[in-house]
Amino acid sequence: APVTYIDVWKDENFTMGVFVLKPGSKIPLHDHPQMYGLIKVIYGSCAVKSFSIKKTSNGSSVDLSFQTPIQVCRHPTVNATTSSDVITLTPDVANFHEISTLETPIAFFDVLFPPYNDEEERSCNYYKEIKNDNLTETELVKIDAPVEYWTNSEVYRGPTI
Image (cartoon, rainbow, N blue to C red; front, side):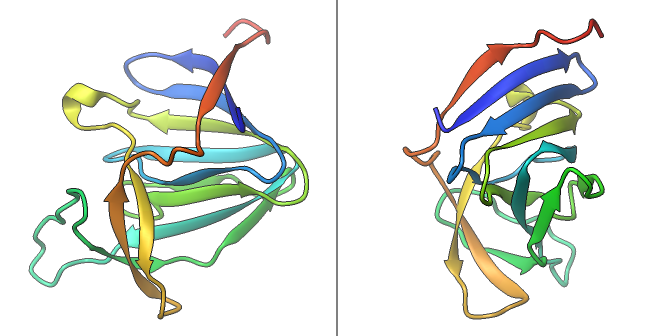
């Protein structure tokens, strides 16, 4: 698989894990609905491309159904290494994101809270960019998981937590 996930810890409050990406691979554009996330590169370097939902003028919620365009603001791409600060994702800021390797494999530590929960509508969704003519604003559309993306898992063998 292009991506390996190592589950370090999970409970009803948060999950901690390590993602390992082979050179030339990526975690496609996705979201973490109503969740916060922390990403810390622990090996190699990566590019993180992220977007935030553009606020509506009347404060209404955004329709995240399939094939419905979502107006988003584009953030500058962050190239992160082991010496970079932690990358923070919130329910409102940079929640739509894609993580790509640069020249080497990468490994990053990932914390999500609260954790995924399909029953509470906190499951991962995938997107593609459908409008790319503006440097600061664009549109995304929800899609099925890309067929070229899959993960395998490994057992955590580190210190007991």
